[in-house]
Amino acid sequence: MSLVTQLGDVVGAAFADLGLDRSLGKVVPSQRPELADFQCNGAMAAAKRAGRAPRDIATDVVARLEDVPMLATVDVAGPGFINLTVTDAVLANTIESMHKDERAGLPSSEERQTVVVDYAGPNVAKAMHVGHLRATIIGDSLARIMEAIGHRVIRDPHFGDWGFQMGLLVTELEDQYPGLPYFEDPLPETFPQESPVTLEDLQTLYPRASERASSDDSFAQRAREATVRLQNGHRGYMALWHHMKRVSEESQRADFAALGVEFDLWYGESDVRDRIPSMIEALRESGAAVESEGALIIPVATEDDNRDIPPLILTTSSGGYLYSTTDLATIEFRVKDIGADLILYVVDSRQANHFTQVFRAARKGGIAPPALTMEHIGFGTMNGPDGKPFRTREGGVVRLADLISMVKSAAKQRLDEAEMAAEYPEEERDAIAAKVGIAALKFGDLINNRTSDYMLDLDRFTSFEGKTGPYLQYAAVRMGSILRRAGDMGLSSGAIVGTEVPVERFLHLELTNLPEVVMRAATLRAPNHLADYAFSLSGSFNRFYDVCHILSEEDATIRSSWLGLVETCERSLRLVLGMLGIEVPPRM
Ligand code: ARG
View 1 (spheres, rainbow, N blue to C red):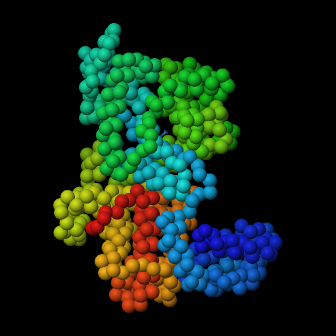
View 2 (cartoon, helix red, strand yellow):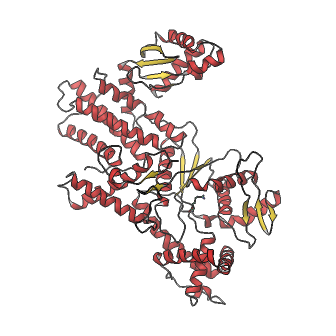
View 3 (tube, protein in one colour):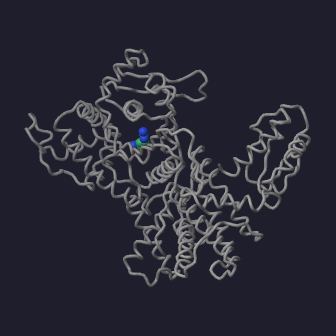
């Protein structure tokens, strides 16, 4: 049990003693660390209910806590805060149990749930661009956090591979290469193994097709018809579709690998295609779906809406399925086949309306049972220096692969400037630069509140100073190298004992916060709490290390306790960085 939970129980018991609610005893880290270690704000809440002055209640609670052995001091402050300071021994014991625990005291959530994290979601025919970066980074971190606290996590990118964009591509290709076997009538028995298009082809075909569709009605109509034919399994279109899908997935997989991101399912919208007809039939029969101007829709607006929520379109008048249709069928799949309890959709905030429609329709149609929780985890934009969404100098979309190589070379330059890893083999320096670059990118993103926009600033992100990924990697490497040097000197760690050194005590306190920070990040779906924590933990460690000269300390008990502290810090920092998807090079 974490220290704040233990304290909360003790303080809660004092509230209960006074006939007040036990939960009022909740304890949090102090907002004024110079005054106390922890605080409880329960007297303020109790006052309203009990009709008494908060200070009086706080005084009564404090009177009941005076003899608690784990507390060094307990007193009332301000309007009725209860300030608590634990003894050095309690603190040292808490760190000692973290030290012994491989998970460094990381909490396990009480109920193991199956959590589907739906993130990244690139569409077929497009290389990943910077727009997918935030979804990938945030989604991956949330998946890691949920897994770290004991949930069963299923990562699913939900590739966009079954909608109108496929019809657009087919039609554009048919116009440009009418001789391809996929368009013959009658269709040949077999089709070529070789893809008729490369990713580069698709990258030019797709914008041209969508441009044409917006200016040319008959082209758009043909693309809609092609979409329907594809969705109905036209053999030639399907063969072509497989090629397009494979070509783009290959490049997407490479981008994900460069980011250190892995999925459990590599599914897309198309993977639920066989469920769609029966799902639609059931929705029609139950009355959830109704006919409207030739289309089949699910009305989802409610009286309390303060904005217009249009109905979800299940089938268009030409008989095609849309993005929402596949999303609904995917919920059915996740509930029935995966046993999902919670689905997190890590998708741009601009899709908020889409998810409102899908979630409501899923409830209304009985696809999402009451026990299933569905959340849209929105996020803001990554902007360029001009405050507008990040683009190339020419105003084009930046390919993710290009951004990744940009950030790697920026990291390499930083290493050169700092003369870091200078004597290592070139290959190792490249590997370090790659890890540093990716860490810079991920941390630069995750440190922000996810709903805010932020500015991509490679210069700042790759710095080894300040709130950056590379600074944290360096801190973790430094902890490791202290331990290695200690090993070389034949020194080992021992039980953690409390000392009077303020920076050390502060580091102890900082470490005890780890379990709560992890839970907060998980509950709020907010990795930035962990990013902040990693930074303050590293700072506290560096301050401790400046003052306490571990390896030259002569008192063996203190020295081995300090080594134990370094081990605990290293493990904790690595755990947190792991949850942020940041890798630490073996040395740098
Ligand atoms: N492919 C979509 C896009 O590019 C993102 C998919 C998000 N996930 C979902 N289940 N709708 O916008």
